Length: 290
Image (cartoon, rainbow, N blue to C red; front, side):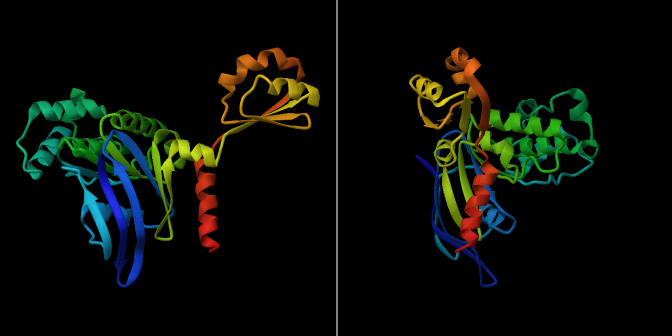
């Protein structure tokens, strides 16, 4: 079942086209979709349109989500409240009753469950702790669709890792849409991608689709062409050129047992891993050249 459908959606502001005929579907199943785009590409506008803050000039948005929760990039809580009080306040603002057990469960879920942290005022929280509370404030209303804007922005490496680990867990529980510039992290975390440039959706697909467009390659240089020809007989998805054999979408860990008998004849190994940033930039250059 489809969670969200965008059909030829265009958004204008002061006569300027901010989004131009956007078409995509999100499936109603646990997964993480990463929304990618340069500054000014329309990411924030797209999120605001999904949330209903902006009305499209044309096109249609069909949402089957019962409860959407939004996590902005910067938390804005009353600094003189505790985490417990913040989440209770979120429940009340969502016309829900205060629920001690639900608040406690949500704090555990995001890693803010220690007695010291729950009693601390929010103004004493680090940026990483505030981002965890930011996500908790969205989860407390028990959404069936979660949207986050730059969740790893300005975090130190440890806090960033904790947020990514949290998102890894959450994406197995509900559909998530994340807008991010952190392409390196989401290249492996995301299940699918939406790529915006100059107000248009220039590419969409799954991580598997990406690997077919920009495959990971491993090239072995052997002592001679005959050795390459012999190795090709036992290695799938490979191509021989002179004294080199190139393998597509093959990890070194998986292929290593097959390479062991050939170690004396292997002179060099070059491993080129898939790079999401390079792929997006190549699409952006194509779009700008039109």
